[in-house]
Length: 84
Image (tube, rainbow, N blue to C red; front, side, top):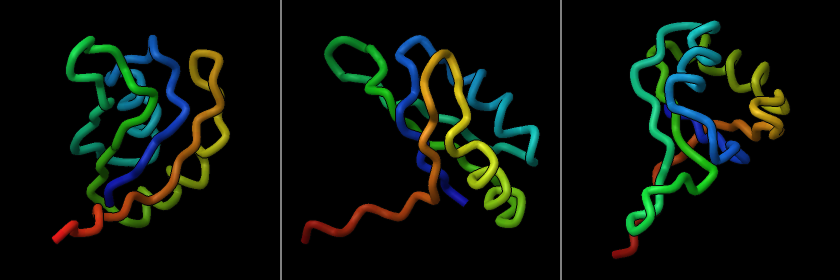
């Protein structure tokens, strides 16, 4: 399951997100989205987990959790709609 994580503090590292989500199961990837020009975090990212049940538990448990002074917003990510 692909998970959308918003309201990430700009100082947060991908390894910190991986650590939190791995409490609920196997994390296959973590990506904090960064500005192309500055390389700074845009404050959101994605975490991918193998097991749907563990991922759903992580979403419900981590949503609203404070990390580096910010309240994380966590929900299931959906594919971007096709623009064609």
